[in-house]
Image (cartoon, rainbow, N blue to C red):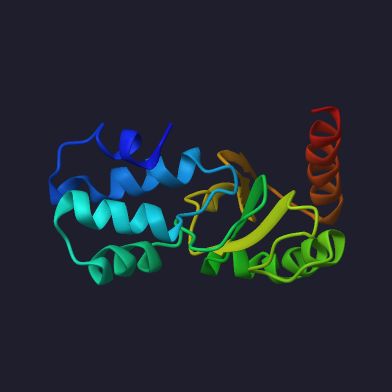
Length: 155
């Protein structure tokens, strides 16, 4: 589907901006918003380019850079911090060979922080794309990453 076909699924009203950006990002194989997508959105909604870019940069669920097939979002809330999420982030960085905010060379994983995943009762937590994982420790993280690598190898 083209950028225009995606955008035209929505009425040209400013309140549709977030929905349009989500739809455009979701259809891109590298899960990010291209400059063309942002420009077309601004034109369609009759908004300035800077206002559309501002929204895309403000919300952490949007990316202006290509990302991996699997986006790992680690909860960095106060509750997760109390439960040693920083050591889990370090373990993920080591396991993936990247730092937070980066994507693996094979474009399989991107590692990001999220302010809160709403899983405090089972913290520490992370999401891989739309799937939530709770009560994490280093061993569980290795298992989860291994499962996603195995799934990708089978595709």
